[in-house]
Length: 202
Image 1 (spheres, rainbow, N blue to C red):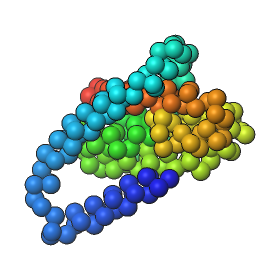
Image 2 (tube, rainbow, N blue to C red):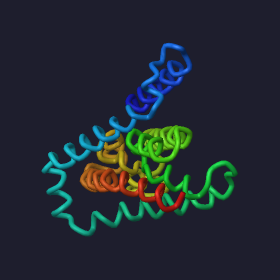
Image 3 (cartoon, one colour):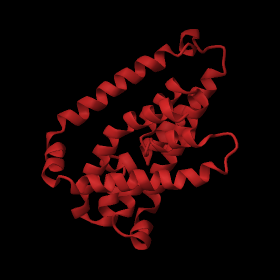
């Protein structure tokens, strides 16, 4: 929860700073965002590759752990498509790109801003932050209404880190491995899926 608040505060401060004359001109040409994206992708790869325990858990569980992320992807897109039809300013492809962040607001927002536009990048940031916050607040309710896997799918990529303690508390410690693997796999998928959608569906 604190991480999400910090992100929102930093974003608001950035907006305010960008509207002042103090904002350096080089920040406006898109180059800093591009190199930030490269560094972020490198760090994501290092963090996943270095976590041998998590990768070993995925190998041991095999195909069973792949099913839940697929359900998350299909469920997210199935909900996005009818909602996008009610939006006049955002196309279905753009909506799918935003949803393909699966809660990974920092990475998906930067990718979308770089490839598409700052406006859609901001929408992606806020939409995915809200997804995480909803999971943090309503995980116990999700378990009661929809079952113990519900908070994991709702959390998306964040089920491996920020929402993992809440998921473990609500669903049970035995679901922590599933949540961890689910989050890792979606984290790997996010940059590929977001980029693919933006390139071929928008």
